[in-house]
Image (cartoon, rainbow, N blue to C red; front, side, top):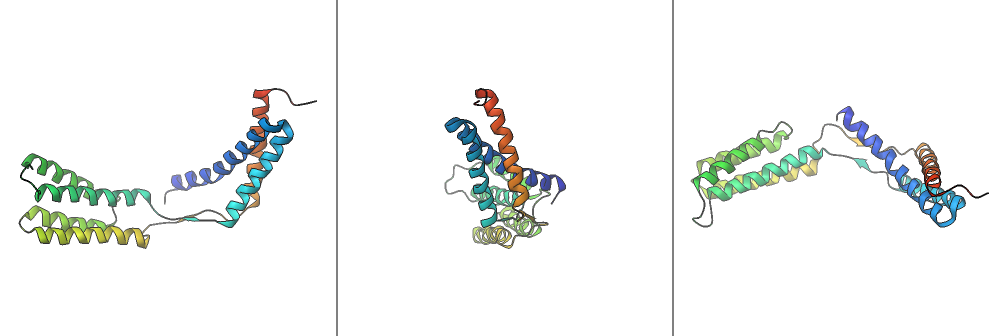
Length: 192
């Protein structure tokens, strides 16, 4: 996984608790001014901390590769519909356009090898255009390849959400306090 994606995941891991705690602080500020802001931020921080401790989930997968695999499946299925139409309304221009799109998507760089091989076999069967059962079998193999790819987590790297609770909770509480102070400045001055 690229370092840019790791950075995004880290920022999102910090920003979610910050936003939740800030929201709790703002809600508390509107309910009971400063005391409510502190109580709201602490309550939201404890909730975020409990959520992170109770259910740390590893983030697995490459959504881009999964999306490409799904796109290949859809475009090849549409190409099959143009090669073997249910009615005589299909045209050669439509078939050529769907073929070009299927080949373009199947040639994408981020496509996993197993799906690429199955897509090539399906495209070969469809290009012959003579045997609908062979094309159906090749499309079924492609569907199974996409399914196996999703099930096997055939990904390069894994990013895991850290189990460390205290630093995230402290960052969330400080950010919640900052957000509460900003909200107080917008609403009015603190009580004397």
